[in-house]
Image (cartoon, rainbow, N blue to C red; front, side, top):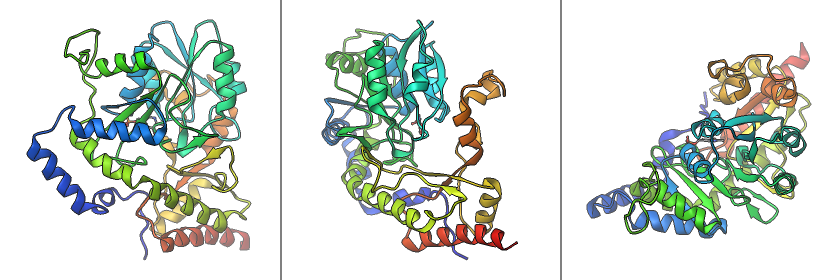
Length: 376
Ligand SMILES: *Cc1c(COP(=O)(O)O)cnc(C)c1O
């Protein structure tokens, strides 16, 4: 039986094994481990790709948000509006600076809804931070106007958004700062944890640059409270190679999405992400392929029996229901779109290891599941 794992972790190494091995030898024999030229080069290349002034490599995507919020002086007593269709990391970063995450509902993009966000603004609100989830941007026209009209900071959790665009702008470059994660399964993943912050604000960049390195400025003088949140030079060197190939990767991911769309688009039992070809002003990069499905759990089991790995993101529980964080089951009545979405969401395999035969096998299996049901 064919096996299609949800994500092939060794695959990110084997794909360019020879070149990665060479990079390892090169960087290690230079003894270039912390804040060296490979990191500076990666930051410059990423800044050029994203058409943004500054990119700073940091420890991970969560630290990136923490540093951005902290550098902007967002903290105790402040509220930051986010979507609950996100990883808990978004809320964690807000909590880590002492502020409160405030959840607003999702729109037809399944991303932060501008009108819902507007309804959550209070006199404590300092920032709006949409998550550019699954390689798609939220409605950035709506969110940007909302932030401007209310003099709020606009920031982005764009951990999953590398290369995604809304209009002519890239995810992570719309507001005061944006972030990236280089967790292995992300669009460009490294061999461990890694992240980056993007900003067009010179003063903010200088501050965050010091903060990620124990508060030391370019002359090594401590000018501000900081922490250790540096992207390893070795990881940056690996990531330079991934970035070089990222154009092909985006194309391939969009091709896979198109193949799913053609194969599954007629199934009334499933809701698919927008097709890569008809989603203007969005340009999507499909970090994930998140669908909605009738009898989702049964479908998932059926696919598992066929050797196909799928994922229900975050166990099918949105952050605003995490009981361990003090949230109850009933507490939010105005997040009904988010709650409904989480009852039906399912991610199909979407990665650079998939062959077209793999994808066709996933498609045939899903059609088989719903067809079998129709005959009963
Ligand atoms: C992966 C991810 C993060 C966190 O990134 P780390 O590098 O794991 O800290 C934050 N937000 C979203 C939406 C993510 O997918």
